[in-house]
Image 1 (cartoon, rainbow, N blue to C red):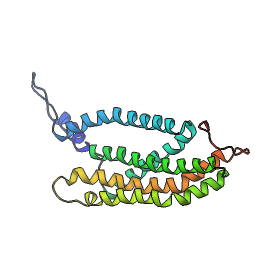
Image 2: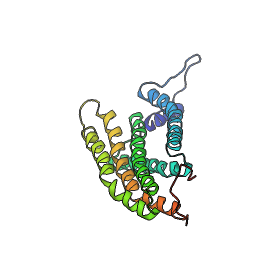
Image 3: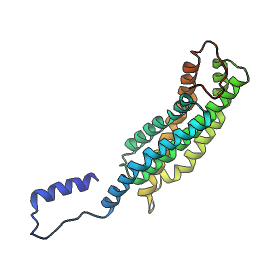
Image 4: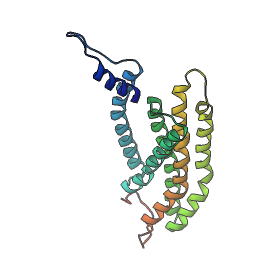
Length: 209
């Protein structure tokens, strides 16, 4: 994209087309532009659907928002991974951001759902959060590890088609690292801070929002 932008600027400065002629830029750049326009629609719609499903699952906008915080952390990790490897944003990287967001949300659901179960069983908020963080440690790590190791060959690929595989796999692996840290450390802390403010410490009955 940046190369074509520089080329267009150079052509506009030095080339004057005769009357009746039109210059059109195509190829991979044209595919990038059309794909980018589709992503501008697909990504917001995807995130809205994720939040809606979270709200339906927990019947709480607050808990849905807590789980949803995994997405910005996953996106941050994906961006940092691309920068560290010197890779440009591409359509495959965009698909990777959507994929890693789904895994991040899944791990958040596992954590919050277990904490809610402990609170419904009568545990105090801090006790439920501590137990949830300990008991869900292995499932969350396993989910992240399986996905990361599965994408590792794609991230290191140098064969034909690697230019498509590497950005996607890099985004997924980098996003999983940061989102897993959020799920195991930040998410329980946010849950304890928010719901621990209620001195009555009532168990959630689907209406914590």
